[in-house]
Amino acid sequence: MTRVVDPAEVELGAVQDLIELTGKAVLDIGCGDGRTSRRFARMAASVLGVDPDADAVAYARQVGTEHPSHDCRYIAAELLTLDLEPASFDVVVFSRSL
Image: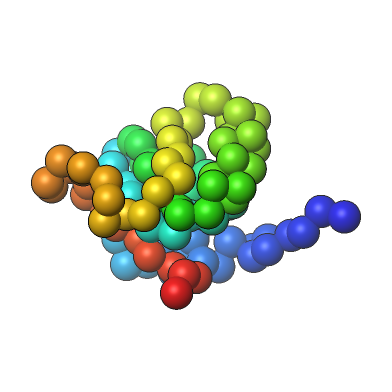
């Protein structure tokens, strides 16, 4: 059975009410299965989803191949262990994660 979460994209709308994503480099911390990252990628210049759950990231990568025109990448890692260039993202999102 396919799980549908937030079909009306209320979460995406809430983020868009706060900040414009068009043309921005977005970091999605705790991206899980990539659902939100893929939605951001429809507008953003690029999205990097990071999550420590390797299985979730593998799923996100698999589903992401359905939309190859979007610049959306995923990394399975603890965020603090990554060597990310300072100020390399315009927007950082951390939602639905503990």
